[in-house]
Every structure is written in C-alpha cells, then in structure tokens.
Image 1 (spheres, rainbow, N blue to C red):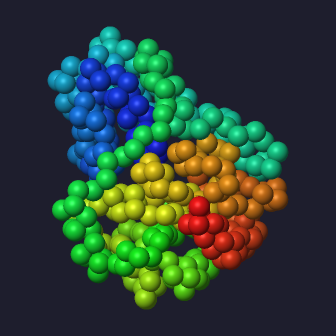
Image 2 (image 1 turned 90 degrees about the horizontal axis):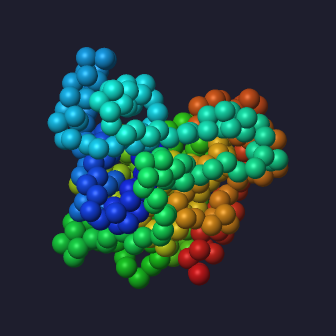
Length: 331
C-alpha cells in the first residue's frame, strides 16, 4: 500500500498539469480510497487480483482494459502481472513505458547505509515513467481536500468526540515486516508520555490483531482509530488534522505524508537512502541509528536481524521520539 500511496502526488501532478488528459489508475480494490482526493480527470479502476489469476485471468484483464481504448500505458510496478499486460499493449502498438526500480542499486546499498549516496526517490522514478511517454510532469506540493462538515461529524462521533483544545498526534506503530517495527513496549511508552504532556493521541492500525493490541493502549488522552471509522478515506481525513504522525517505514507513513501531515518516521532494518522517504518531509523528521554499519540489512525489511537484538530500533529511545514530536508541535 505504501508504494501505491507514493504514486498519488505523481498522478495529481499529471492530472493538474494535463487537464485534458483522461487518466485511469489500475490498482487493487482496497487501494481505491487512496485516490479519492484526485482531480476529476482521474478514474480509478479497482480490481480483485483473485479474479484474474494465471495467464487466462490476465488475458481477460487485458481484454477488459483494451475496451477502454488507451493510447499509452505507464507501468509503475514492473512485476510479472504488469509485464504480461504491457507486452499485450505493445503487441497492440500502444506506447508503453516502465519504471526503473533500480534493483541493482538497492541491492548494493545493503550493509552500506553509512557511506552510500542516497538513491533516486521512488516518487521521482514514477515521474520518470511519464517523462518517457512525453508527459513532462513537474512534481509540486499540493493541498489535499479536507473533510466536509458532515464527514467530520462521522469521523469524530465514533472516536468519542475527542477534545479539540489539545494538539492532536497520530501514532502508526506497525509495518509489513517485524524488523521495521519499533518495539511495542517502548512505543506504548511514547503514547503515554505524549498523553501525560497534554496531547491527544490517535493510534492507527489495521486488522484484528493490531486492533486488539491498540485497544489495550487506550486510556485518557489515547484513542485507537482501528476499526472505528467507516473507510480508509476517513482515516486520511483525520490525518490532515494532526500536528504530527509518528510512523514506521510503512503505508501509514506514506499516506500521512501524502495528506500533508508532518511525519516523524522511525527507521530500523530499512534505510531512507533506498528512496522510500515520505513525500516532501525534511530530513530532520527521520529518526534512525546512523552509526550502524549493518543498515540496511534488507531493502524491504524482510530479513531478520543478524544479531537477534534489533539494535537499530532499540538504539532509539522513547524520549528521543517524544522530544521530536513535541518540537514539531511547538513550531
């Protein structure tokens, strides 16, 4: 989901700079809300991948897409499914461009985060695909839409109408892989320190296990959002009202950044130099252990810590996170 969220600023720039262009974003059904704030010339086609399994399924998907009469195809993903689809469009004499993910560069970065140069950000790599199609998109900041008054009521009521006289801060303590997650005990301590300092904390997560854990963190000044709002879009709207979001290298990090929220991101097994930094966030909002030669131990955080102690995360203290959040609030 994080990779998909990083495409939003690029599609927004394309849609606004080429208003006469008709754009279709093909994505998974559950990711459709990420694009709800884009201009009217963007259509989002959400699908369930399970309905298009194997070569036959992809053939049916291609036939479905072919009926829409596209002039050009931008492959932002470059996986087996998209390789097949772009091959079919090429055979149909359509203009096709594909992302260069820099896989070799990323592999060379492993274990060299201290001395390696930062790689090209993924957001810029997405824009490069459009440039190859002759669409010279310039990435610019944008102001995402905010909730209507009725939307806002539907957001606040399920959360118990939290106090508006306190600064609001979000914490998204999870990520797709364990070694990208700050230890739960310490992160709960951060939440409690912020609540004790007069901050209204909102906890973000997804799924039953995460929901159960975050429910156990709730107390005065700490509210779990997990499972309480009717859609991902409402969570995105809530993020626009936060003074800061504390997040791992995760989808919530990218979504909050996309919504214009200041993001205090925490990095462990992965490294911001790999090109996955949150959109338009300054470097001083990144918290990481800069003096560990083992980082990153993998690009996506799938590889277990070689030392077994997750020292990259444990070297970051709850006090450091708390202090950085309070600094952001005070600005």
